[in-house]
Image (tube, rainbow, N blue to C red; front, side):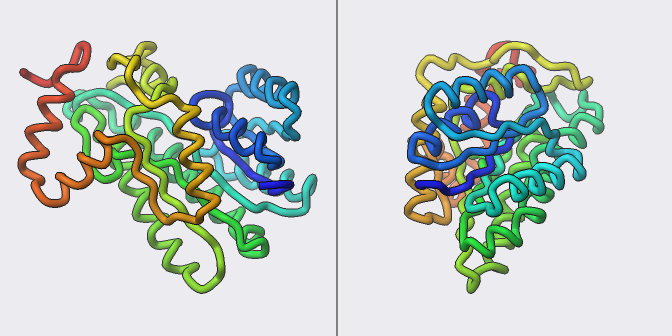
Length: 269
């Protein structure tokens, strides 16, 4: 990773912040972006104090022009892009029948279109460097989760998009990784949107036994180094993907019963 230029979207907290430290500690130059300027600056300072070369740029990945500017400023500063990590994301938690469709549109704009914009505009430079495109997806991109229909849809879309792009680039030397964490300690559940678009403000799950964001980032770093095409994390995640392929009706019941146990779940038990 020495002197590789790595763009990480949604890097002010959680897995994105952990990825910035993981790649930076390996000698990479990290370009971080986020919508929240205050937490972005806090992360920038922490990275600098750790001796990591960093460029912090405020950007909303759901806004196409913001993403264009992110790519252009990175190239203007460093003349190259080696790795793009599409990490920016938001979740939602409400039953479809209660959900304003605008909430799902917001989730799709950030999780899916943000990935489309960044990948499209970074691609010419990544082709030049024969670098890597990474999408931080989710087990929800393999198995639809009740009460998270919009989030699942966005991750299914990301998975299909990256698979198509990987195939398009098969003979170019560009590496495409779809990384799917299971439940990981991060603020994505705290920042998830409710039925009317309001932020929920608290996690609905016990996070004490979840994989840490730092451990997740270490797995992703190794996967980029080895140029893996797919990374599915946690025993529960691997189990879910496997059983959903072979016993989907059983997984309907298992997933329902598991998520019905969440705090304030609208699913009947």
